[in-house]
Length: 188
Image (tube, rainbow, N blue to C red; front, side):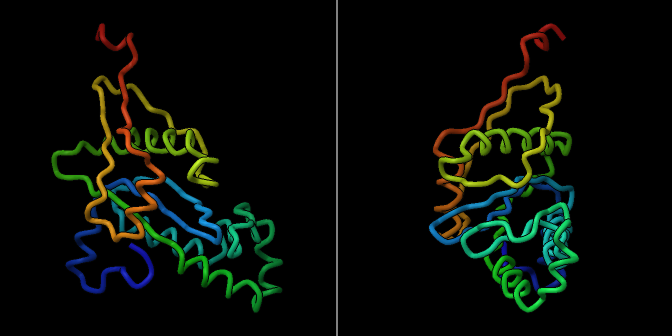
């Protein structure tokens, strides 16, 4: 999902108004990638929030090489308004390179597991920062919680466009992500 691919009718929008896990990926010159891992009980609403934040200069804005022009803390946002002719072409390019890769949760997927899957995916990508991914924008700690069951996450991208499939395969690597509950939980 990205520019030119957002749903145009209510049924398509309704199909995206479901819980899921997502990667927000931006690719820059020299194949530099910047990613963000998230989860939401309403994917379309969350995608809209990301775009709205970008359009209002409320998030990190990068140039074509991926270098930071405006920090996320908004300290430069008021100054950016003084340079609107310079900033808006960068903003347009930033929005144009944005892609959301997502997995919708089925009816049998417990919504409680969204945070666990988000944390596992973030931890996996953080371990790969510097290898295939240059920056992970949301590096805050997300607790794995106390899940009593093992979890295995497989990356399967057959429904992705070829360009996104290659990016996701490079980001994820070939091995599944695994979670095993702590030993102390075996006694519960």
